[in-house]
Length: 491
Image 1: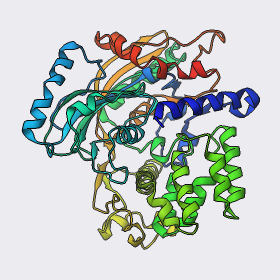
Image 2 (image 1 turned 120 degrees about the horizontal axis):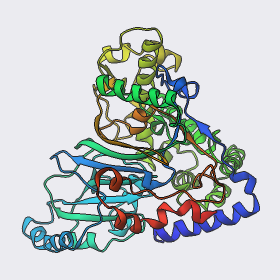
Image 3 (image 1 turned 180 degrees about the vertical axis):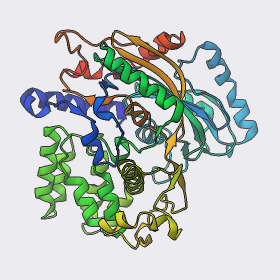
Image 4 (image 1 turned 180 degrees about the horizontal axis):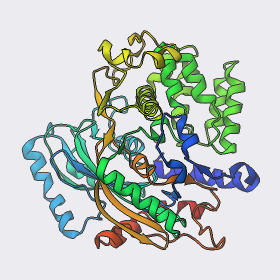
């Protein structure tokens, strides 16, 4: 079944459930303040004085455009007729260069993660889902955003790519390329973001924001791994990573399937509690029935459970069924320790070095730096033998800067809040940068697309790039209208 049809069935089911149990779908306001972030190793001096700001109220509020390793900017612009004519001339080039030469394209997406878009294209192109080298990309882009990035296809002709359609993404700039893209094959990302806030009206708040921006311009910002690194909204994936590093595969699987996180909707927390009660007796068939209405929301859970139905004791096999997720969980562990190291130094008033190594390294000096933290997790001495089955996880020496500069492009104050355009190097989080200016919030799902001052109004869709750069993005906004408005449609 096509992803679009699965998504529709899933949303229809949820809408009916919401009518029956509206109280289970209430989402309280959350705020990423100093107290909350400290649990993830994030400490930002002066944060208690920052105004509240809301990002990703609409996907169109958060635009990410990748600059490739060759310096080309992948834009979210909808292709015009001239661009389409160029693509129509690529078939002959593909035949001349041979199918062994990769085909490149720009993936523009909205309301879908990079991994899910790759999975969908894999199915539509008839590629082997067990292989993870037939579609290459440099980085994972945000789900609730409009993003553009370069991707490569192995042994896929251009005309096959032109036939792919989805209301969540489109492909453009289809052309022959050289070599498959790998993670990290980019220069930077350009962000155009609307931070919705009504707290910029006072002189005190305006001064705080101005001073923070000046500070960042002069010195950069602390390069913390932000919450999405830890699996928003559950924010606990490093626990599963620790279990996997220890070889506690069963604990990783069971905790992943059953943990009901505070920021999850109560409806889904209830589903996880049901799963927990059934796991202890190995009732995988019954768990499958519980997950059946949610083929996308619980996609990875279903893959694990389906494996365990056939192989009840094979928890390693269940993890190998979701290798991309395991990669994120394991890499979340060094990310957390990196954050904690910076925060501890700042809190003690000590000098923060310009860079720190990550702990997943065979260099003894790298792991020794984190000795106390590893001991607290019962991971010292650190061994990697239980990671060997996961071939996509690399153990190597790597250092990460602790401070990062920001390339500012433009800012503007609008009635809805603050518009800001900037570029960050690869691997840096826009939300980390923004958290040095605002206390980021998320609100009640029922009201997040409404003006907080007017319960009956809908939030305006803002063409951010048009305001800041004079580039009209209306065609792209029209293409993704269903995704941009999906929360309003679900009410």
